Length: 485
Image 1: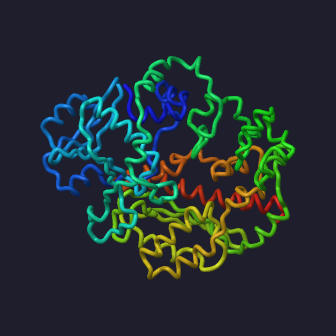
Image 2 (image 1 turned 60 degrees about the horizontal axis):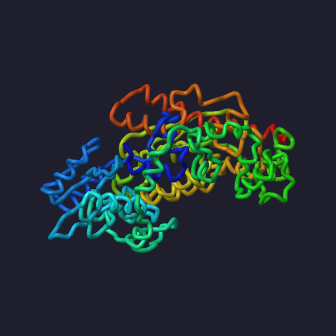
Image 3 (image 1 turned 180 degrees about the vertical axis):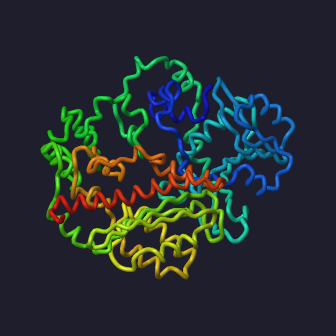
């Protein structure tokens, strides 16, 4: 049995497709966002649909063909051709005019969706299902919830796609016609895949695009060493280097690559087989830090649909913080908070009350996380904007020395996340914690919302507390490196 997602997997990489069919997931899937409303129910409310055929996972496609003869509205309905299953999100029959709506839990459906729509239309034709028009239903990015949720303001109907910059790219059907193809040849290829013996796949940008493929180590076990040329960051030339026989960063002379600052740090660490430190850059960066030093970290969950007043689609709700406060004598005090339901204002007030009014605030990846969270809260609760601004303007991003090449250890292997750095530069590790990653923390918090569990709350405290203690450890590692300790 093939599903529409299998076509995308196969075209990304035939080996990746084979692994997804024959190997279990190496890492359990944890959703990044909370789908707090059912888009099919929202669309029913939007149109006022009553008599609807509603399909479900596992349905026999023959049920859809029967429903097509007797229902005017088909939603989430399965159709098939040659063991390939596709889904009709919402087919509306009205006065001999059939409109197929594609539904998106997102604000900006991209042009890449054209292929899925084209393939669905191809299978519709094979099943003699009439489609006269294709439209998109997606979320209005500008919708701000009032006290009550308004489905007519939240959802939009459109006949246009968006580009990667979220700008309108053109009519849906123009892209769909360009993507239209005969699937028989592609299905023939897929059916011929047996085992891995004849699949010879070279590494490509698809192996690490957006994220490293979960099967990467199975495909390229010889490329796992820390100083592999393929771990060079910000480089489009690393594949050319590999083809020339330059397999290790230590072999690079400089002309073969882009020669960015970070690449220089990586290459120097590889040549030294250890740690590279730019003392002249690190010292002035450290001198900016003032006591008391606050080490701060937030945990939050992202909602697709705004659950509370003044929230917009994909806004986040910060439900936890951990704060370690270090004075000039080295004494360390820990503060923490966990809220439930709409705890936004309570979170703000607790944070403002407990955080020092002066001194530096160390945050890991501040601009991409904590700063944005506080800015969002300041818009939702403008009465606290001045106090929140005072907090985010004192933030110093602890990730910067590691991400911009001021300090680099060959064992980083092109990565600089907090968990990896802590394990490299201390004896501490997240491995022993019940919660050891951010998405698992969100999952556990969702459980906590419906269950007042002290065990879950304690596990969340330990995880977030480890984040801020890790910041403390890393800052003192940097200070020690330049002789400040």
